[in-house]
Amino acid sequence: MKTRNIILYFIGILGLCSCNDMFEPADENTRQEDAMYQESAYAHGILMYAYDRLPYMTTTQTDIATDDATTNNLSNAYYNMATYGSWKADNNPMSVWDNCKDGIQYANKFLTIVDKVKWAPSAASKQQMFIDRLKGEAFGLRALFYYYLLTVHSGYADDGILYGVPLLTTPEDGSSDFNQPRATFADCVKQIFADCDSAMTLLPFDYIDIANIEDIPAKYVAIGANTSNYNLVFGKKANNLMSGKCAEAIKAQVALLAASPAYRDQSGVTSADAAILAANVLKRIGGMEGFDPTGNIWYKNKTKLEPSASEMPEMLWREDHSKDAAQERDNFPPSLFGNGLVNPSQNFVDAFPMRSGLPITAPNSGYDPQNPYANRDPRLADDVLYNGVTLRRSEIITGNYPNAKGESYDNLNKDNATRTGYYLLKFLRDDVNPQGSSLIEQYHIYPRIRYTEIFLAYAEAANDAWGPKADPTGVGFTAYDVIKAIRERAGLATNEIGQPLAEGDVYLEECAGDQNKMRDLIRNERRIELCFENKRFWDLRRWMLPLNEAIKGVEINLDKATGELTYKYFEVEKREYDNSYQMYGPIPKNEVLKWSNLKQNKGW
Image (cartoon, rainbow, N blue to C red; front, side, top):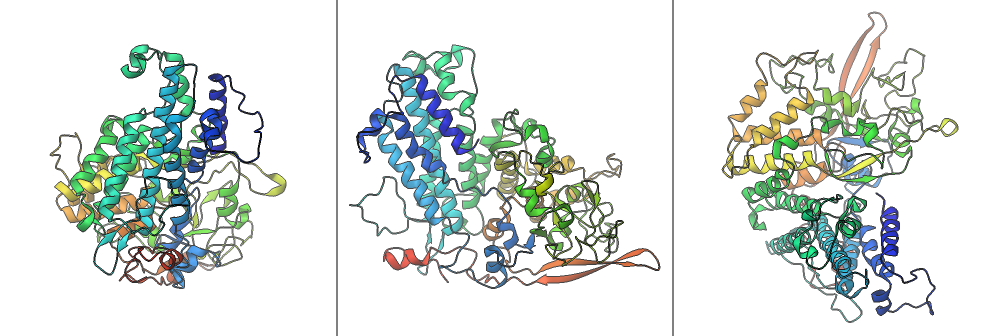
């Protein structure tokens, strides 16, 4: 649901519970704060400004600054920061400082007025339910903004202390002292946890309509709530607003960040803590019983991409889009009237195992670099468009030879073509045509939080805390169980017709006996499952893995005499990162120059 639709929804339901004319013009153009107390839509606009600053990206962007991809747009800011060393404190395309601080300011301001506004003056129960829900949303949004600020801007200063950002829980005004020091990372985490807990106390786990008064919390029944007005406030029409499950998931995400190698020494959060918080989210859906068997290809479920469709089991929180062709226009190959912007790397393609589950580097895997796409993990064909694949009834040739029609539009390094030998396929709909004269648009969604991400968070933290097969908390599943389910869903350890191999998933069983091997396997599964969802950049940093792995590609040629293809692997570009300090992003330079109490991260 877009923010505009949320606003229209809220104005509509408030119109049902107030006699005031919310659309009557004000006597003056300058509105005073006390006008908000009488005009609920005016007050709610403050919270909507916070929603407008949600930090989620809705297209693949940051992945081209990682080892997973590059781009043919050589003026792209993420490309330049990765390849020319242009990532600076005063030139940071990753920065969320202004956006998230604005969101926090709006949330803080809303929290000071929410109790005073006449949301539903004619009914005490509706008035209190609106206050609780809206207050819960504000707490959840503030937690989210602080989570992103920590992800992007936290780090060690020269004094050896791990800092987060300044903690602000009241709105700033003209009399405020803006020269605030950064709070420690640990204190920021405590505040986020507290905000998430407040949100979970006030909000329902999910927004659903109820039919029985017994399902209404007793505190609302005691002041006269019935199913009709409960559903008006907490029912399914509020779906996609901040909810209890969103706040609980954000708390789990923050815990995983804090328990990661880059932060754990001073975060106050352990891997066991992170595993328990992820498990709390997953227990709400029945643990492994709630694991979506088609969750890895959610973007192919066209009937569920429409806003009117029932929710996908895979989506904990999603962003809906109107019909468009933007993703396809950006990323289809040129022969399909696209710009081929995101080019997956050979590095990324090599991360996919064989269909047997063995890595391609295993001596007995059967991988042939001169026939590289045979018997590979089925997810490769779902996410990456490689040489010879047919899309929209067109053969896509990324090599240095024409397709059956004699066309070479998609060849390596042609205009608007791939620089690596690969095109992005994930997210793209084959029933879209981005060509202007024959334009066909369709609905798209973008995941804010997927349940698979939370399952992977649990697996990562649980393995780090207790090992692959331990379950000391009795949650009912282990890191091994999660990874086994993910790999089975992908179709690994099967033959070409999908039948399970007699020997099973040999590589998974090997990793199950070694905590370090399981850690690497979990990280690789996360890389594949969450690919091109703007996760990789931050995962590399929180894991403290090398940032400067050169991007590789493949050049494919056709031997006209034999009709055979040859594959030559080459370096596309180097990555100019400095591993000594760029595990942590900078505080914006202009902020550090303005405020003497604001310490910069080491090295910036």
